[in-house]
Image 1: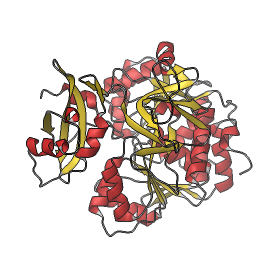
Image 2: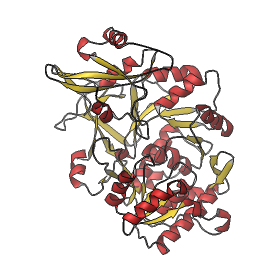
Image 3: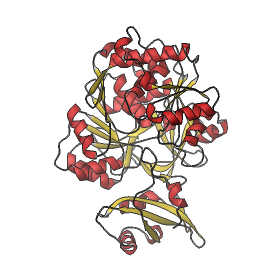
Length: 501
């Protein structure tokens, strides 16, 4: 490749090049339906023109995308970018009041939605003066849009392209501002480390509004001229397997619990995948072991956050792989371990993981004070605690806010969770801290058992006591039917802390 993506002016120009080069090639497989690059270029070009002429949006105006996974998500995303506007993907699992907060906070001019959420969309439009709506079912068929395409946007690499609202597990969600350059930088780095090429077909399962899917599941395959196998439904899990096999998917980015479901349900099956990537949540070593034994396919754990566009590190494609590691920084991204004063710590020392590079966000939308808290000397403070070993591999011990102080000693919930996953009966596990007048804090475990199995609290505690120092062992274990999670699979520990147990 003569020029890297990060050196191009903006996303619309980059994607426009792919559309012209690939044209009739299938960009998206959607069940029995196939959609070409040209199809998305035409619909996106039409929408960009409508945004300007029909709704009067100007470069820099924010446009909301509130859709479930469907091909039109790509058409409207590209159309918003071509118009020079800022795309704001909205979590389609949010309640109306939560969506209203984002619409107001971002000052969204037009909300792009679908008929499945028509009633909610119209209710929001009636409440918010100046907000206009468009339903993707009204996009004209591409065959009727001769001459429409994208690639003429004049936005620069430093201009704002996307605002990703963080999951909001603590307080109101904040909008991470990602420029065209931020996203192109991350796409190029991921292209290099994953060795993504035109022949690759990315299975897209996770919500398209999420930053992980936006970069790795949508922008990366389209920028390299590859294809997307967009999975219509994840239920039952065998449907995922069928679509991957049917359309020859080669790369699967997903979350740990999906890989566990595949490894426990489809032993003996073969898959065309050359690579699987686990992101959005920590990958327990037991799930990694189960999956790689079942399928003999590399499953590499990555790490990132929306504020970093989002990928920060990945395990090397061809190894060596280290159990429990989130790998090494992707190309052109720096990672350091720092103490609270900003001092960079040596290998092996535990501190806060900090990130620097062209992928790091501009800041939080309309929140300069929050931006100042998250940035220090151009380093993004991730809030994750970890260390780097002598070979440069990174390890997360826990979230800074989740770390416990038991009798003055640091205790990391993830270490306890890893041991819980070693119990054959345990399907899911999470550990939080509860205030304790004598010990400061004490760990409390929440466990989901595999169907048809039973374990007592005493059995779980005894198992942990045989493998952990006494001060790390939870005094109480609570059994749940399922752990509370957000749309991308992240365990909501704030909800666990609020449970009356």
